[in-house]
Image: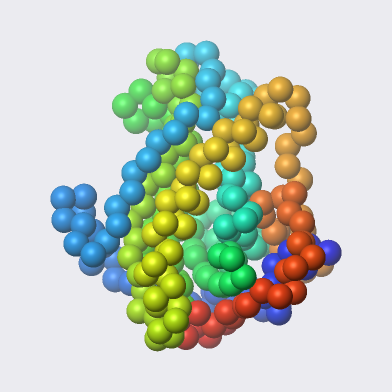
Length: 246
């Protein structure tokens, strides 16, 4: 059952509870590139495919990548898994993330607060971004953009983000996040680009697109192709990180 792929005791209730949470920081205090302060600012761009010059090609790398990014099919499931309602509009969608590190599982809420769909500087751009909700171990925003250079035909994934540690009352969690959080974050960014590139290329060469796993409550568990390891029952689950209500 797809429910077994996420360790939260009640996935449906957890996702439903996100609608009552707010973004966990004041955007007025968000950083600017010249003054990062205590914030990490990331802006990476990796190639994932190529098309003929001009607008995106139907069924081409840009279109495939947009679909995979929309459905959260680019994440490395060894690091992060997501649950969301597929019937929700993308803008405003709440997502429950299961962050995975060694034997620990953390359940974190995010909300899609930005959708990008435009042409700028001879580039066709589509993507979306989420912000962290109350109870998340971090504060910040993460935006994924699929970009086609209409002159060269190159298709890239761009990740732009700012983040910092949220106040965490548990001293063990606070220490662990201080030591491993940033390293895991950067590993996740690198894995996203590689997984998206590999999946796009596989589909272009005839592979079937991923089929999402759907729970009995109609929730999507992404990315697809997940499996439950036999040792999963020995993991440690944190259902209320940062004192959240879900």
